Image 1 (cartoon, rainbow, N blue to C red):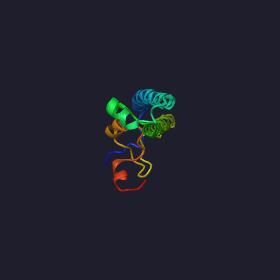
Image 2: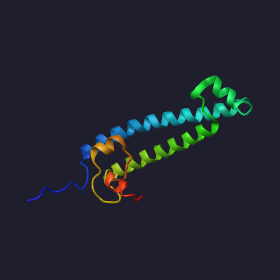
Image 3: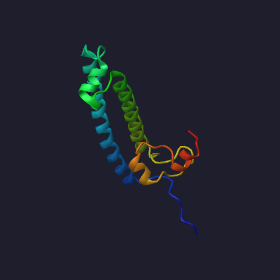
Image 4: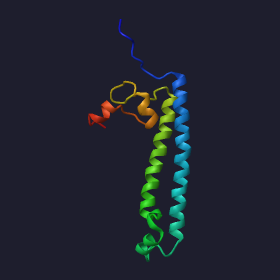
Length: 128
């Protein structure tokens, strides 16, 4: 008789993923706050618009323009929202289930991309 395929992760496994997600969420929020502070600080500095080339040469690659910081902050906020949605899926016990195939996403993938909603099989087939 064939082994029955798991349709969801156990409560213990979900708890493990929750810890991973909460750690990533904490770091993501700290990074987002840092980016927002950079934007706020940059916005109050009157020399940014007058000599951006000199400023970049002076401070090197660590200097981000307001626009770049804004884009990074938007991406970070989106990442935070994806992580928070993953926490909701954990509470609903639907976490780790591919939204295309309905199969479990491998643990290895979820440990690397804890907010994933597609298995590599579904993702590589090109459907979004």
